[in-house]
Length: 478
Picture 1 (cartoon, rainbow, N blue to C red):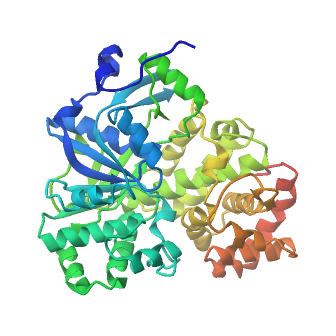
Picture 2: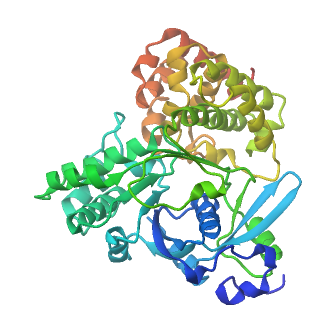
Picture 3: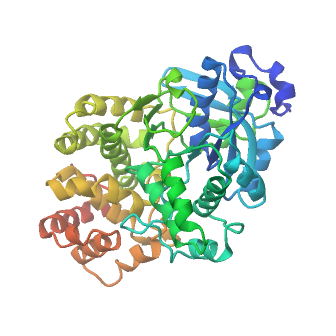
């Protein structure tokens, strides 16, 4: 392998002209603070922000914060916060460098700088990709103050918070006390009503704190902090060594943090901002009065089908979403699931059949290696939102089969869950298998994920349990 120079501002001239950033990174300043330095943000919001800044000629730079991995932040700083995105379509790939990130921080070591940005009047927007787990919610949506990480933050005081929720709450409180400009806090996580969910835990943290002015802080936040809900969509699989080598070959320099995604991307934002924001609509984002129709369609069709393909594909011995689609049942699963779910969707939302047709095309893309093990992780958090509301409304045989796929995947294995998926509730889920018959296991698992009503629904439990023998034998029987 040829040795190549690393990516950085001083090597941009070496890469192809059409792969260089659309903005001059040195001309931007941190006006957006992003919490959650992962591949999805780099392939989604950072791309939208760069193109919005370029189109408007405005200096919308992003300061990104890694909640846990200081190494990732350091690697990004080492290449002047530049990185590449490779879009892989059926007909070929395109690699380009993104320049909208201007600062990379780690939440713990750089807490003082994070706090300074949260109180900086020039920072008008905070965005977050911290996943469902990062919200530390109880099943009813309120902050779980008994969670050890949250309890430690509350005990440590505003300067010692280590969770994103605690750090954000403390920073916003400091901003309110300083009388700084209003600010918009934008969740970009795959959760129903993600803005409302984030607002609940942040405000819940302030309310649970021992700060003497917490009531005043909450009053000021109500007037000066908004939490718009959003829908984000782009398939961004985990980066592999093959992806890294391909990015280096396309650029002619080594990128330590490349990301790969499908060509498709979508961002729908509730038009509820407290102050200035990047003109994301200049790059195709939708800013709408109500995201609910888009949100429910995406959650129940795209996310719901994704999870179904993951659990059933794992049972059938597949490795990626594209592998599952290449079976004799993959396309039928996606289209039939859409037919089952359509009656539960808002009439003013996207057409379910057309949406499913787009999903089939996207999921079929063999150049996107989205691992089923990755998609199937954290099922105890995903399944309740993606499938259970539909099953409460109507009988849905394909969703019942998918639920059986999840049940099968929770079976204890030699090293955790049966297929190597991970879940914050793995121990509680594993306990449901000990000394129980199939129907009792299904009931226990539904209880464990906050669905005692469905656990008591005999027809559903019987139907789910009936699928388990075939799945255990590697058969998916639609």
